[in-house]
Length: 341
Image (cartoon, rainbow, N blue to C red; front, side, top):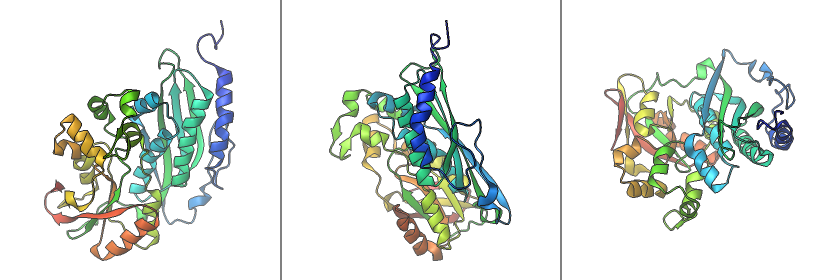
C-alpha cells in the first residue's frame, strides 16, 4: 500500500505545477520576491512605501455552485476568472488596488491538464486585475469529492492610502448613481439557476434566439472585473463617494451596504438594459421581479455614487477602461435603504 493506491497521486501534483507555471508567470509584478512552488509567497512593500497611510484591504470568496456548469460542460478555463473577480472587485470597491492573489483548488482526483486549465483562468483574472498570482494550493482529496469534481476559492490582498478609502460617509442627497454593465449572472444565485433550468448537456447546448448563444455559454460567462474601471475613475480626478459590488443578495442587500445613515438610493429600472438571460430566468422559473432584484445583479455588476458635477468625467473614465456605464439613479434624503422603481 502507498499514497497513490490510497487515491493521492503525488506525481500528478508535480505535473500540475509544471503545467500551470506558464500561466502564473504572466501575472508577475516586480514586487514578487519568491519563485513558483515555494512554501510561501513574498511581496515587497515597495509598491506602497510612498503612501501617507498605506492600508491593506483583503477579500476572499469562491465560485459557488456555478462550478456545476463547468463540470457538465467540461469547460474549466473561465471559472478562475470568476474566483478572482469575486475577491478583487470587493477590494476595488473599497478604493483598493489588488496586489496579489492566492488560489485553493480541492479535487477528488488530480487531472493535471484540468488543474492547469483552471489556473489559466485564475491567471487571466489576475492579469485583468493587475494582481500577481504568488501562491496557491491544489489538494487531492479522494473520498471527499467525486473524481470529476472540484472546489475553487481564493484570497486577495490590496492596498489603499487611508485617505482614499471609499466608505460612503460623505454621501449626500443629489449624488448620482452610475452602474457598470455586468456580463450576465456572474457567480451568484446559481443554486436557483440550477433549479430553474435542466442542468444537462442537451439543455445547456440549446441555442436561444433572445440570448444570441447557447444557454450554457450565457450562464458560464465569466464575472466582470472592474478594477481597471475604478482605477480609471480615480485617475480622472473623481472622488467616488460610495461603491457597491452587486453580488449575492442583488440590489436589496448590496446597495444599502454603501450608504450612510440619513440617505437612500433610488434606482430606476428602466435606466439601463437588463440582459436577456435574466428575463429568460424569471419567465422559465416563474420568479417574481422583486426576488430577481433581491438575488441577481440584473445587469449591473458595480455601482458608484459620485457628485453630480463629476458624472461626465466618471462616465468617460469607465468607457476608457472598456466598460459600459449607465446613469441609473440618485441618492436622496431618507431612511437608509434602496428603492428600485
